[in-house]
Image (tube, rainbow, N blue to C red; front, top):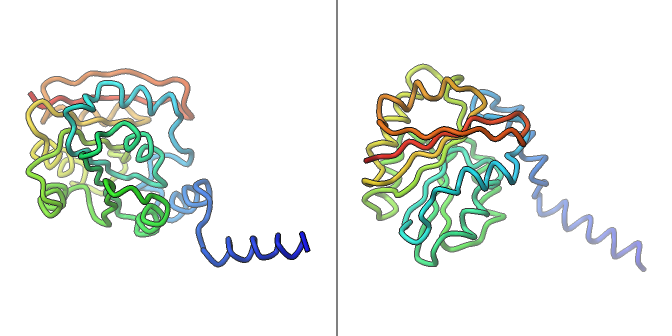
Length: 204
């Protein structure tokens, strides 16, 4: 009997078709290496440091580019107010389906699309701007013109006092955001594989 029960459990898992986060992350990297910043999800220390400056009490809309398997989504939802919203935008339809299946929070919306269209996406969700935008997209390897377009659109969608939160493994990302944000704070997270560059571009 126990062996039959275990077999049924395995069948249900297989039938559900929901891979583990690590399987999804690796699959996404192999399919779209240019669009995925790392083969390994971000560390807890990186997540905590990246989100530390966020004023959660005043945050009504948080946007994330390239959420992958939701490594940041869950900590963000844990900190957000009950009436706040998190919109995650990804060009990888597999990631969007995975997030829709695994995150059931009513404050969360996963969108299959480009970060360059963030203004339209935010408006379609009934908002006039975002308080914070987070990105782990590999700006330096994006197709020509896409990185600058995303940086411009992000600045435009942010409310005054909001911030563009960026974590990268190359300092070149600063070249993309500096034309749009006069104040940029910087830090490093060494306890990550690989060590990450952290930037906060503030819209003043």
